[in-house]
Structures are given as structure tokens and as C-alpha cells.
Length: 249
Length: 53
Length: 148
Image (tube, rainbow over all chains, first blue to last red; front, side, top):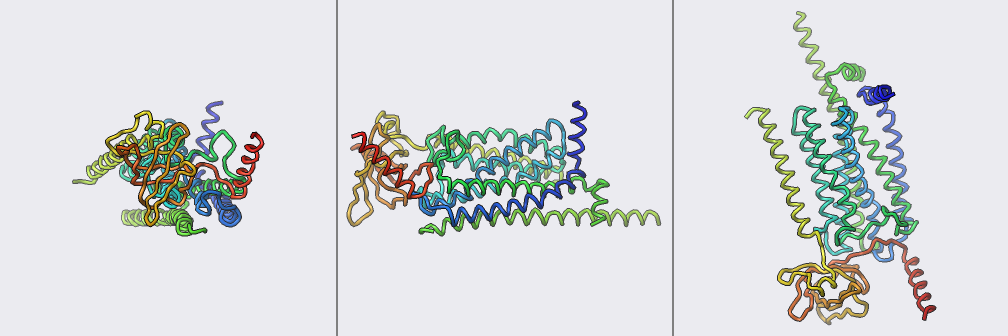
């Protein structure tokens, strides 16, 4: 039984198999991401009503919140893949982790910048050192650290081990970010959607938010596969299947 | 945008600017890898033919 | 330096950079873990009296007094347990209004007034259209009238 599962995992995680399957999946994810973005932006920018307190400025929520969610989601995905790579020595897991890092960093950066553009008109400051903002900034640094280790260490196995370890240790930051607004007095307000209670946002405003969140997830799915395919090609550049594939191009 | 146009549009601009740039750079890095392998294959083929002679 | 030792140097530098960033982050974090004190904490004497700190609370309705001709403003800040008077001379954020949550940075003067150097607005996690907010307010008003 176990050996069967193991064999199944090995087939599906073989770089050659992955390269082909991922190539077929990418267009679907990309098309879904594009369609949901257009739909979500239309509802968010033109249909959803203004907020009773923040007026039109709250529309930044439709990029800020999905980007912040993605920065956390991708970090967890990266750390899980890195640990799978470390423990079971599945090479594809390391590839997924290293392909995820720049995407996660981009989303963390977007969350910080759009948050600051939202903070200025509403709070009165572009930046404050409260627990939520600081822990999100540390998340960006963790992504940078992972990417730096990946590119600095020449031996791929050592690079995967070192950066994977950093990714796993950094996971402690994820619950800190999420609960920072409850554990400490922060300028950042509490959770609107991701709480056990009913979301404290009007349905007409919630729907575009969820659409954008789904759009960003599909965007990540498409882009991580694109990046992982490139990475697989590069890592297997001396293997026969890559040589045969490139000869055909 | 009720006086907040600057903040709202910059937010959207930066978000989609960053995401498009990342997409573009990810797609173009495939070309780099392929060219690199092609060059290596050419070099190896030349070396081999030299050895044969 | 050959290639390998250069790589090693780079790794050491990266690790050093990451740890410095983390330490800096955590220090900033530690100092501001408690981003602001509440008026009740000030009343209980928990807030520092020598250095400046932040206080957060709701602006008491009807307490805002503006001076004519300049930006100086005075208002009371409450957490429904204790109240502290605040004075401020500067531009207030758009969200500043009576009943609004704010965070002010400054010091307590000898008369017990909090002299703010900076006032930031803290908004809540609720998002709704203005009509819904008005309807909620009206319903609240009606309920109150009924109970009287």
C-alpha cells in the first residue's frame, strides 16, 4: 500500500511529468485569474457602494487585502514545500518552494505599499511601527532572505537545505501577523473577514473582495507553475529529457 | 474617487504594475534557460566532432 | 579570493543581513508592542511620565473645541472607563470626528492634559454603504426611544 503511494508520488513529481502537466494547466489558471480580476475590479470599482466612514478611499481594500492574504498563503505553501523537500527529498517540492518565493515577496510588497497609500488619507500617516505593519515587513525580509540564500549558494542541494530551513523557522511569523491586531493594541484595525463571526462588511462590498482574492490565488497557481517549469528545465539542464525537449523547440 | 483618486489609482497601478512585471520576467526567463542549454549542446557537439577528427 | 570563498562570504553576508534585519525588526516590535496606552491605563499611572508615548481612545462627542484663526484643537479622549483631555496644534486626519477612534502621540503636561504632537485616526473593521449605516443609526435611535 505505502509503496504504491510512494511510487505514485514519484511518478507525479518526476520533473518530466511535471513539466508536461503544468504546461497544460497554466492557460486555464491564467484565463481564470484574468476573468475573475476583470469581474472583481468591475464590481469593486464601479458597482460597490462607497463606505459610510472612509468614502471612496476604502476601495484600496480590493487590492490590499487579497495581496496581504496571498503573502501569508504563499509563505505557508513555500514552507510546507520546503519541509516536504527536506524530509522526503522530493526535488520537485524544493522547486515549488523556490518558485513561490518571488511571488510571495511581490504580494508582501504590494500589501505594504497599498496599505501605506491607504494609511495616509485615513490614519494620517504612511507608516507606523505597530505590530501588524512591523510583522508584515518582517515577512518581506524573510522572503528576501530565502531568495538571497537560493541565489548565493551554488550547490543546489545545500541552497535548498539552507533556504528551506529559513522558510520553516520563519513560519512562526505567520500567526503573529494574523493575530497581531488582537494580541496587541495596534493602529491597524481588527479582522473583517477572517474571523469566526459573520464578516463585518456589507455583502455588496464582500463579493468583489472574495472575487479578487480568488483571482490572486489563480494568478499565483499559474505563475508558480510557469516559474517551476523554468526552474525544472534549469536544474535538469544536463539530463536527457531536457536535451530532447529543447532539440524539438 | 471623492478626493482620494491619487491614493486609490496609485494603489491599483502599483499592484498590477508589479504583478505584470513579475509575469513578464517569469515568462522571459524561459528563453534564457533554453538559449543556455542550446549553447551548451552546440559546444558539446563541436567538442565531440573535434575529438572524432 | 577564488569563486568558492567569495560565495561563502556572500552567504555569511546574507545571513548577517537577515539577522540584523530581524533584530532591528524585533527591537522596533518590542518597543511598540504596545502601540498605545488607554486613558484607563494613564489614570492607573501605567503610562510613562518622562518620555512621550501614545494614547488611544474615542473622541468624546461634543468635546471638540477649535480655536479660531489657527489649527489648535482641544478634545477629550475616552475608553469608557477613564477620560483624558488632549490638546493638539496641527492638521487632523480626514477621519477625525467626534466618536471616532484615534491614537495620539505626545506627553502629559503638569496639568494632566495630554499634549499631542501627532494625531492618527483609527478606523474600525466595519465596512458598509452610507445608507446602511444611516439605517442602523435610525434603528438604534428607535430602540433607545422605545426603551425610554
